[in-house]
Image (cartoon, rainbow, N blue to C red):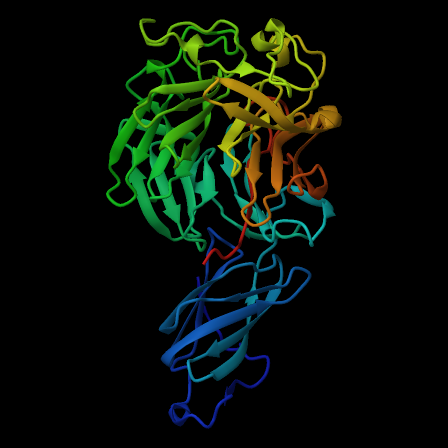
Length: 507
C-alpha cells in the first residue's frame, strides 16, 4: 500500500546552513518532490521512505518513545530510498528526519506512520533483568512460530529492552514451519523452506531465492566469511535424513561442496537415537575459518568436527557403542576419534563417566545438545538440553550452557564452565534452544527454546556478563498458545527455536 504524506510536517520545513561563509552553500539543499512512504504486509513495523534532493545528502532519523531509536543512513544520495525500522506497534509513530549535505545545509522535517497492533497470538514478553550498562548493546531477534494444531506459522520478531516488539515478519504464506531464520552480515533476513533458501531485506522484498535441487534444508544455515552458505540438508535420494551439509555459492547459487556424515560416523549406533533413519539429526553447523573445518551438532549422536575434505577430526559424546563408519560398516573406527574427559589435574575420569553412565560436578557430556559453536578463546560452547541424560537414567531434569576445552594433541576434553543446573525444570528445554557469544561485550547468552512448567510453556533468554555468572539480561517469552492445545505434539504448541542479540540496523 502506498500513502502520500500530506500531513508530514510537525513544524514548517526548515532549511539552513551552518557555514554561510562557504561559497558553495549558495546551492541550497531542497527536496524536489513530495516524499512517499510505502508500508508492508510482510513486515508491518517497517516503512519504505522515498524522496529526491537536488544534490547528494544523508538522512538521519529519530523515533522517540520508551525505546528511542536514532540512526544515520551511511550513503549520500539524491534519489533517496530508506527502510525505516523500529516502529512501535499500534501507534501513530512520530519520526524525525534530518537531511544534511556536505556543506552542512540541513532540512528538518517530521513524518507520521500509523501501525497496526501486534497479532493477538504473539507471546507476552517479560523483562526480568536488563542491566543496560552491561548487556550487549543490541535488541533481541527471535524465530518464533505459532502452533495451529495442523501446522505452524512462522513470525520472527525483534523486541527492544523494554519487551516491545519493534519488527516482525509474517511468513505464514509458506503454509508451515519456516526454519532456520537468521540475519545476514549485510542486515538482510536469511530463511529457508523445503528446497529453497531465501534472502529478503528487512522490508520484506526478496533479494535472492536459491533452489537447492535434490536437497531439502532443515535446522541451520551458516554464513561463511567469504559469504557462501553452509546448509544442513536432507539428501532426497537417500532413506536417511538430516545427515548432509552442502555449500551454496552465494553468487551463482550453485552447490559446490557436499558433506555426507554417513561416510565418517557409525550409522548403527542407536544408544542415543533409536532411529535408523534420523540417526544423526544434525541441528547446527559451524565453520571454523582457522582450518576450514566444520563443527556439527547431531542431537542423536554428539558434536563432531570434520575437515573440509570430510575427514573426521574428533567426537564430543559419551563413549558407549561407537563402531565402524560407513553405510556398509566398512569405514574408519569411529571410537578412535572420541575425546577423553579429564579433570582440572588432567587426569581421566572414570570409565562410567566416559561412557555416560555417570556424571560429576566437574564434568558431563551434552545430551540432545544444540548450537555447538567455537568461541574466541578456541573453546567449544553448546546448549546441553539434558534430554535422556545418562542414557535416560538421570532423575534430574535440567538444561545448561556448557563450555569445553579440547586438546587435539592428546585427544582430551575438559569442562570449563557450566550454567543452568540450579534452575532445574524452570530452564529444562528438551528440544530446540541456542547459545551465543556476543560480538562487542563477549557476554554469553542462552535460549531455552521451550520450557513446559506447571501447565505453562515459555522460552527463557539469559545473558551472562563476560567471564562470570552475573546475569545482565533475563527475559521470559510467555507463549499464549491461543490457536493450539499446548500439548507436546508437533504443531500443537507455540515455539521459539533461537534468539540472537542483533543491531536493528547493521549498516
